[in-house]
Image 1: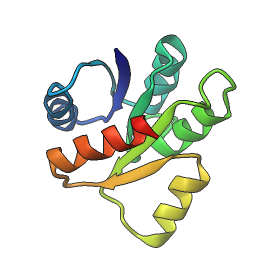
Image 2 (image 1 turned 45 degrees about the vertical axis):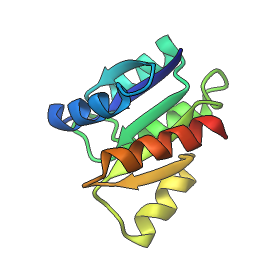
Image 3 (image 1 turned 90 degrees about the horizontal axis):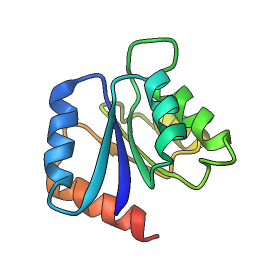
Length: 122
């Protein structure tokens, strides 16, 4: 069973993602900020992280992505950034941080599931 870490400060977004992913057989772990994301990634070593960018706390999603991708034990973990930001400079920063892909909010649950399957199969 593949493990997916869902990171978003908004419970509603985490719930939509969890319900979407429940169609398939995934183990879901949740975090509400960047610090928890890094901690839980180290603890669970997920196959995929769905990471929000703008979150409260000392570490935002972009910084959490960089920290996770620089960790030798976690660098193979795939990261999809789920964000409302869709400017070219945001996309550049997302990929520079080490994310494998990005998905914009609001999102189609079926399109997200398709993207998750695509990333996990690559």
